[in-house]
Each structure stands twice: as C-alpha cells, then as structure tokens.
Image (cartoon, rainbow, N blue to C red; front, side, top):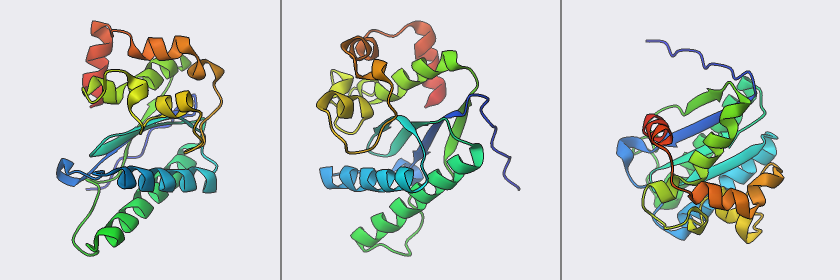
Length: 187
C-alpha cells in the first residue's frame, strides 16, 4: 500500500514525533541522549531547519520545527532519523538486526499560529506530563531546560518569550481538560 502524502502547514510549522520500534528504550544513558542531540544539531545545521522546541524521552522524541517547507522538513527529519539509527546500531554492535524506529516519522502541520504556543508548551512539558520530573525545566533533554541553563547544545529559534519566567511558569501550570484531551490525541 502506498503511503499518503504529508500535509502542508499554512504556517510552515510542524510538530514531529518519532518512536522506537516496539516502544523499546532508545536512550538509556546520558551518553545516548547527548549522541542523539548531536545528530539533531548536525541535521538542523546541515539542512538549515529552524527548531522551536524539542523533548527527547526514553523511547521517542518530539520536535517543533518551522517555518520550513514540507520537502525540507522531510529531508532533515529523514536525515536525523537515519543517521541516528545508523550510529545507534554502530555503537551497540547491532548492525543488521532490524530497524530502530517504528516507521517513518509522524508530522502534524500547524495550520494556525494560535496553535503554535500551545503545541510548544505541549512539547516542552512532555517529560513533566509523563511524571519524569516535577518541573518541565528539570528535564535535561528538552528545550525548556536548555534555554533556562543557557546551553547551546542544539540551536533553537529565537523566541524571546520562551526564555522568560512567565513561559516557564506557563509550561508548568496545571493544564485544562481541553489541553489534556489534546495531549492524549498527540500521544
């Protein structure tokens, strides 16, 4: 069966998710997370893809990318996924044992700029929502933590609001029932 075409975003922004095959653990150690973020950095610099936010969890990751053309998005995410899988297998000595990711990445176009901030919040609070940390900025493998620490681990788009205490407090605030429904739909 042929794959469906990816939808374009009128705004040029996309929420991108990829998950490991069988939801197996991809990132077990700090070194695993750092290796993935190095690949992500390399990919977004090589393909000049603006990254708004990210969160890397043990078996999947979320990115908010844009503005970017759909074909450029496909090119950069395909490169990041393939390069990470190759390096992951090489490091573990498991080349030829099967795929790392469950399939092609999932991208959801953001059709309205009104959705950009709620989705950025969703991505940056992902580890908190999963119960991995009390405060979203405590998750070292996410863009909120990176901004709060002044880290340059992965180049991020410059949205001054996202570096403020107001934003941190908003990300950590109790979410509404409507937001809970949206979070479940995004998982």
